[in-house]
Image (cartoon, rainbow, N blue to C red; front, side):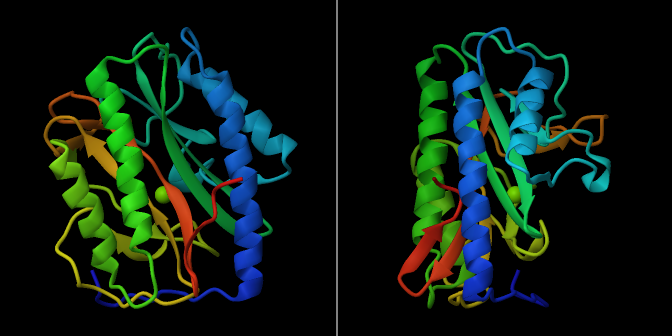
Length: 253
Ligand code: MG
């Protein structure tokens, strides 16, 4: 981290496009939250995402990306990220991570939430709450004058204080004209390292938090990352711009 990074500074005009794209993506997520139910398959959740993306006249950024076959990455329970939608049926007490990228006027937005299916066992509800809150702690450090690893440290220290672990094998990223731009944004690390943060930088910050140990492995489908100990994992992500007045979450209504 911090070496050979080319972090693009966005213009105010670009930020306006990114804000509008983020608003559309947040709208899409609100509808998905309302439609996910016990008994649905992950493939059906992806169909909902597909129809919402089309209705909003935006482009699904993940479909075809390095061969990914769907609009949404859908990751259930022990699946960390990059789950391929299919025949898996959502059961009462499951947690389901939904991650979607869209392209609006040639600019990318990226967002993920982990949803409760039915009633959760308390430790799973805590996992969701801690991961959502960890994202907000990271976002709070996305300020001009801080260093990149201040975001990472805020996420890791909060998550570990709650007894969970942060995934090391996957990280957040810059975003804008491409889905993945510099820099990489780990969810762990000591503070005050890496590039100096500046107004106009735009980041996809995305903690992945495991109930058990941090280690993950990728299934033979080449995509789905699961926890090595098969315990549950949660994932929340926002696209965030650094503005003169502080962090601006782009992927909200
Ligand atoms: Mg992302």
